[in-house]
Length: 357
Image (cartoon, rainbow, N blue to C red):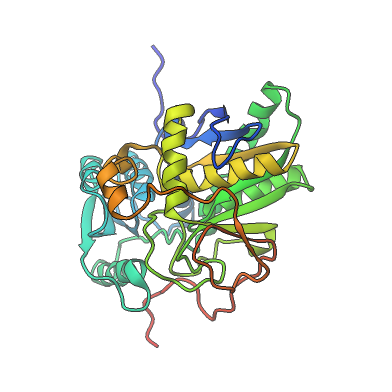
């Protein structure tokens, strides 16, 4: 009988070919289905961050781990923390779906739920404020700080090697385009950086959400959770991207539903946004296009896959099939938009640290 080490089995997700005609017919692209990997996409970074903290002596044996999350990282952290013998407190907000709250609690996490967004930094800043209050009250607790921790990106170094191996198995020597959703910047930096080393001519496309501040747009309320950010994570490697797309919820909903009907591999906001841009990219370039589907559909059954919920928000109306084009990332946009000039936002700080001032 073979005994499986749960932490040693993190990752190893399948690479599949997607042909669902989203946002328009295309010749197909390859997608890493991270929902089918043990612990999900974020278990890769969670394992890297906690093991790195152990090696440096920052995380004591049995110490509590505290992190802010919109959901997906929480699953990975809970999975890894419990396996390593650490209690975990996750700071979430009241918009987190009840089924996801139940799942995180089932995985052994304690939830601190924030009920009011910060007037400037929204839910993300409000969660971070609460997180710092917890850290001040529990001196031995450890904050992985997914936004600025280089171990976050390092946790994805195995993923690009899996992509190379899987492509070679179907006779594809290299990819021409990589499409990556961007939140904390972890998986886009880890995967993109490694693949660019192997394939210097690789075109890397970042996928953000409307209302996200990562690439220079003003931060506004975002319908799409788990994609984008109201702060500027230090893990985002701006110089790596050849272009960025801001995708709207209507495009993401259409993509997720079309993938479910015609591809049998679907997911949530990040997956729908990545699929929208990957399908578009596959229609623009002749070489292989690769993307990552970060999550599965389970937590979105009462939102993306609920007709009434979507209809109330006009998300079932026909989406755009091509992006609007702008020349400067700071040009305000209200629809799926593409910019081929990516620069780091001119900001003095990245993630809120809790310091005065």
